[in-house]
Image 1 (cartoon, rainbow, N blue to C red):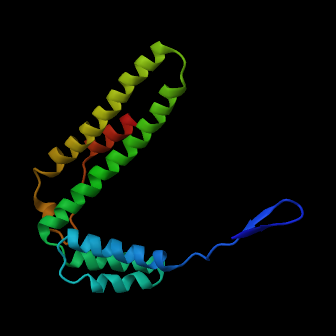
Image 2: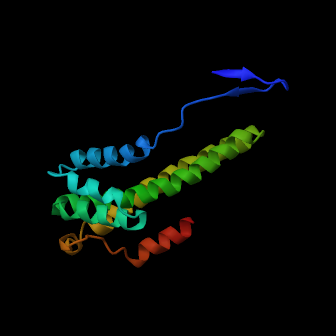
Image 3: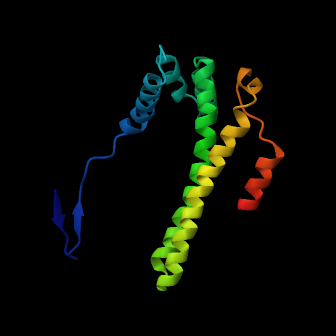
Length: 162
């Protein structure tokens, strides 16, 4: 619905945006996550979404961690650690592919594609290093919030690859 003013500007009227998607989206996400993690009662976690935002995520995390088994907590640690390496190196790959796309020299493009292959190799190397450092020592897996203590060699490899 609109009309034309004398200055030839068309105005359009629309319905105001509803706040329902802002409220329902987080609750759907929590319900989806609770089904995915096999939690019995997601309604407790849903209540936390209506509290203050900074406290909200902390309480939600505590709610989810309280119901996870030992194996799920270990798997969550590995998933978060692998995701960290994958996100960091994927961002670097994205920048590299942007450079490859705008570079006019075919020889430089060819070399940069090999650098991209090295970046993918770095992702595989760091995830493998995480596994071969953490798996031989089972003591960290018995903690309430398991987190593998990475040794000095891992830190040196990460600094060299930066």
